[in-house]
Image: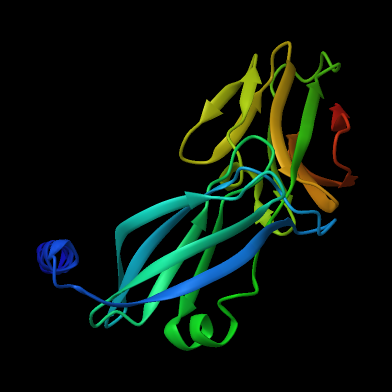
Length: 226
């Protein structure tokens, strides 16, 4: 199956590289906006890709890139590719905004291509503090995870963690000892972040939930002493 997909991708790329592959143009105009404030965002790079659907598989091939101007607006001439009906406009992310993938068909582009709006989700700082103050029992086990806007936080933004023990097959785990850990990451701004703590101690399992509404440009945090 992978070899089959690889062959299709290769052929697709060869077709796109052909000098005779383009079949007309579309003049596009639009803005890149903050999803929450609706303020336009300047100098964001947008990557254009041709999209081919083969059964349940999606194959993309790079075409071009362009950027918004100082006002967050863009104008772009799309060179249509023969036999391609869908295009991806990928707005690149950074430490402030998450990447945004936008798939549009030719009909969408023909009807609304001069008033496009691509939205970016804002990220904000989030710190998780874990402090084990109990001396007995000698060994207990703490497992924790977090979600931001319903998505596993580890899949939204990389995290850094100090003073911890981890089992890669089960997640973030602390077993006994002098635990004073700090996790630093980013989560979605203006959304709820839910931190789930599960403590195994003295043969009992206790689950604790912290819900934090995380605002932009602030030191959002959650902490646990156990």
